Image 1 (cartoon, rainbow, N blue to C red):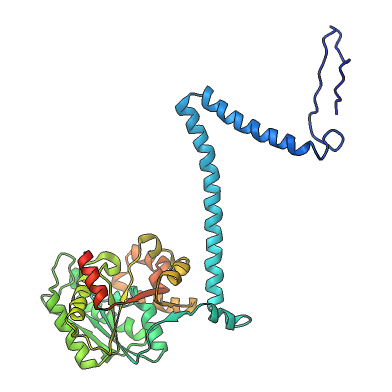
Image 2: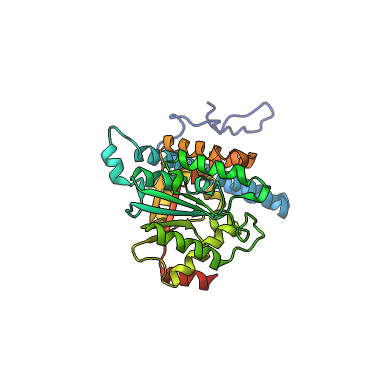
Length: 339
């Protein structure tokens, strides 16, 4: 450590002013340290301003932007890490069987669906029942509810109708649906084709026939966006909506629509859990073992196992979470007017 001395000089007679090269307890007191730190902070701001002045407007702005971007990315990374930990902990607590199991189940329910003994699921193509509604089917079967499946086409878009028909039966059976409770419609005016127009009245007649013959207490199908945006999925919603508006759905039957979500939530798996619990009124959340059961059922649709569906099985929230919304006449009127 060099101490300042006004008498120090070199051989030429010039006075040498020496300054401390580092801080220690002999040169910086407790009262002067905050002042020095504040001075250093001001010096940093001064240097940033100097960069803007000396480096040129655009280049200086670019350098400062990079500095703040780096800090922002650090904060975003911390937030994402904290959110991921929250999701994992919440998911663990939800299905914990020992220790704080009672507390976990009181904190949040892993499923919230209307009670029923007979339910009808209406889909457009073979594989819809597992790809989108797998958690709902498993939860209904766990409650000893008899699940009927109405599939409005045999999925013959790629000339694999006979194969996909058998895959539908196999997948439903693996989820606990009886073979005799599956109805597959093979009609020329209801073909698996995104460019084909499915008439609302045609679908409504199929639905009404099933509702009258099965005496179900719960109807489950797509919402107006159809999860994937497929026109055949959306057509089922509008047919269901028409029956609701006309009062032809029995008052003892509740209608649940599977909620469509944006692409980020769609492929976030269990990391969509907090958002689902906050925004949804009806939901089903599977544990990891049940999730594998849905994935295995989806793999039984082997004719559809292209690369992007394999990724879907791994990352999609619909393999582990279903959020559904109960609709009534006023809701449908508002949605149709908005459309």
